[in-house]
Every structure is written in structure tokens, then in C-alpha cells.
Length: 106
Image 1 (cartoon, rainbow, N blue to C red):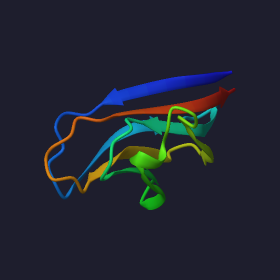
Image 2 (image 1 turned 90 degrees about the horizontal axis):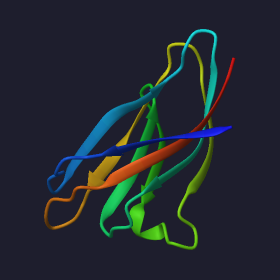
Image 3 (image 1 turned 90 degrees about the vertical axis):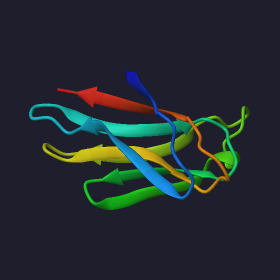
Image 4 (image 1 turned 120 degrees about the horizontal axis):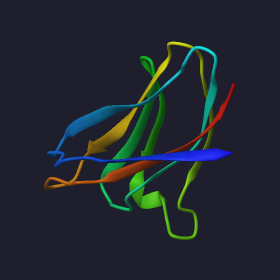
């Protein structure tokens, strides 16, 4: 079963990357991120990291109502941390929302 977790960011200033700890791998549970979705906005980019490795850097204006989610297959082992957020390249501050879909077994 896919579960969803949503996070609304406070204002992100121009030329700033802002991340939040969105999901962690847990002992005894197998977690896998299957999708990410965000506010449709130009000049901001979704960024997803597993530990220090950047997995996603995707322009939010490429997300549309016809294709509202970016499919993923990102397993999280025990102790691994997924950080997600945005880089704002816009002329002003933005307050975007990010949603991840994940599966959990165990």
C-alpha cells in the first residue's frame, strides 16, 4: 500500500536551497519512495537526497495536472535518510509544498 507524506515549506528566498528530513529507513521495515510531487511553479526545482547523494533535481514547471507525480524507485535501508526540498531560482520568495509516496513492508 502506498502512503503519502506532505510538507509545506515556509518562504524560500531567491537562490536558496531549503531541505527537510522527510523519511528515514527504519530497523525491521523496508521503505521505498515511489513518487514525488510538488507545487507547479516556474523557476523552482525539486531536490531529493538519500544521505549525501542527490537523486533528483527536477524543474517544478515540468510537473503538470496531467502528470502530477515524478515516479521513483528509491529504497531506504536502515539508517538512511531522505531529505527533500527545493532550490528557488525565482525572482522572489516561494512557499511550495512537496509530497512523497512510499511503500513500507515489515
